[in-house]
Image 1 (cartoon, helix red, strand yellow):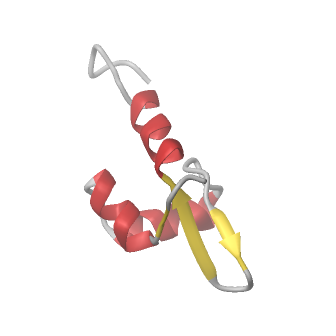
Image 2: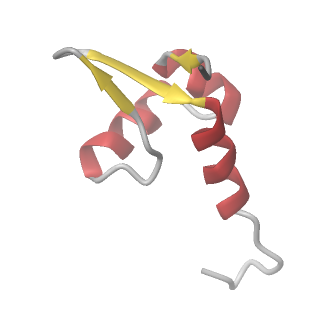
Length: 63
């Protein structure tokens, strides 16, 4: 089974703030997450890496 990361660990891996990930979840979650119970949120490393791969651009005008 793949290791699950906390919000703080995921933020460190992505080099973003915890607030960035919290806003992302609130706004519709471009980055997949797993909710365990009523409060615990975890991220899979593979989902974080896939998100990073989707952000690659060859021009600043690319969407």
